[in-house]
Length: 406
Image (cartoon, rainbow, N blue to C red):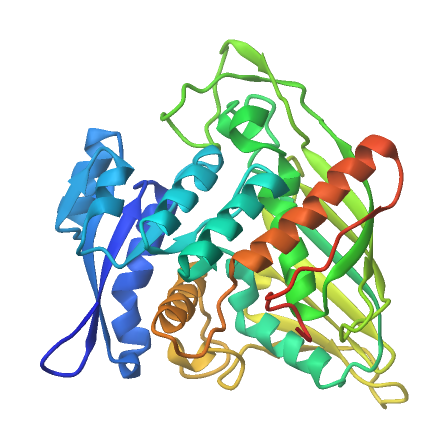
């Protein structure tokens, strides 16, 4: 990093893996100057890595990186790279995250950080030892409606939180002809929908009402075989006719009962959380409902710019009111001038990029960090053990998270 003559701080960006998420990270960095001109930053896209030559070329010719390589280690060795985005498949996250930390690079990494708690903990330990800033791709927490919901909980405006419901229902694998990508292979992905979607939901719950202390879970694999998709081709949305069938090695559905930890704003609340990648009907119904003694609220990503908020007990028109996201909720005003003009998914990643670079510069640290990822991984691990043993399983508290009340 260096300070330019005009007083702005220049940060050199590296990218590892130029897929859909890598493109999204790159757009987020580029759009920071439009949404947050007051940050006094210039993000310079320096070096991208992808083993596929076409994607490496795309990084330079389309995304605007100055150079590209086939080996991610070249990015980590580059002295002009200050921060790195890690957007590779799950099975590479821990290896690359640890390498980035040891190279002294601050990193923004997609979830799950590892194939389970043990790999996530290894990345957390490497980041702590190196003293680098980490940021995690828990993008749904940045929706202005969620930021407002968290505010309502922390201020006690919903009263004592009694229970929570949440769902992460997607249909990207609802078709049995859907390709068996790396996401369905335990060696490459670890868990299935637990790590892919439930981890996001766990983070939403912990961010909005407090850490999860105990879980009881059930899982199922709806489609036990799928047509194989060669590594590095297509996406997990691909549909294959008459392909070679291979076994699905992880779960399509997960449900769990949860208890919120003592000391949290939602202390001792209970709840039910579900996640599915094979639902028919919901496309990306990712939502949370929070119930309190004075009111309740619910949010669904399919209607990202709305929060349904109840009136208090005894209100003349007791029931739900649709509240549109507006200036004053989170960072909404950075993107749109007034309620009814909607933000989009990409905007959540711009907010995430902003929080990451703020933390890198030693400013207010509002980003989801590696401790948040470890906490979510522990809950997911407890859920997997619970499903296997049919018993309640604890999840140990994690220091240094951004959970509500932390």
